[in-house]
Length: 374
Image (cartoon, rainbow, N blue to C red; front, side, top):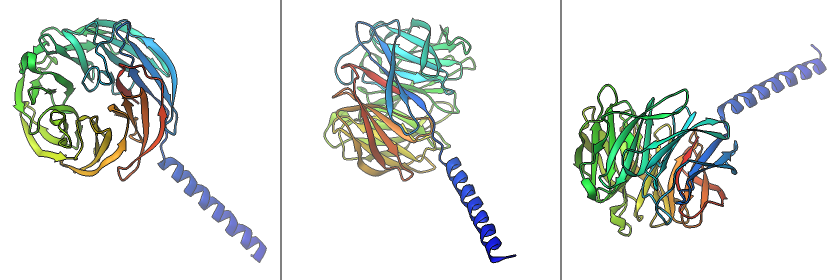
């Protein structure tokens, strides 16, 4: 082979190799579009505010869609809860509370468009949190006689129907001040946090998804608020607001058994911040974040396979009275609603758990609530 032909042959091999490397690199970086949803929560008429997320995490306002109900509460954190607006696992349905009119609204999702399904009574007074699993939805009602109430979901239409016999009063009664309800992954159990009684409730479910009488367990730290699950054992990572005492907040971990028993995995990993209220966990369960409203910060934690959190950075991020938080579908971006100035912080999430602020989206009304993302 001549030197010239040999050089051309080698260059061809090099080009093919580089193209292969580039193709493999492109495949390893999965970037997807999606949406972020926030409730306007206005007493004169609640709306779902829709923001489109592009492949690099930036948000653009798309639409506001009336829920057919009214919002409730005032201030930067009007509902004092986690997950008042939620998505189905496959991202095809959205559900929102109407705290001012004691109802829940259901929507089908088509791209950036929300299509109203139906609006039903929440089964109590002032719904503040929702949880979805398969064809079941449970609502947490915070006022009157605080309770949980269940609904079935028509997967074709998105319509909600009350689940007979599913309404159960919270063990803490009128003093409960509940913050969140959620299904335990892999178990027929619901969990509720009660802020003012500093206890965590569990409710077993029968084969039809009907909740049974709840059991109450004392939390290891005061004022349990938001939570999310991590690890193969689906450990509940619970934020400890500690009554808002300065620099006393923490993140605790609990293993919840199939019968609804609750056992502390970690007694509370302090973050030296104030009023840790919201919790978000990456899809792989490797990192957890608390949104510390009182100190205007976000703390990051690494999480062991067994669900035990260890503080990484007490001030991994920040915001103006940061409250609700949610990850994008692949956990590449973390979104945090700032109640102090009506913005949404957009953070890139790195492989070591660190955060970098990439943008701020303005325009949320005062009194807005909740945040869901896909």
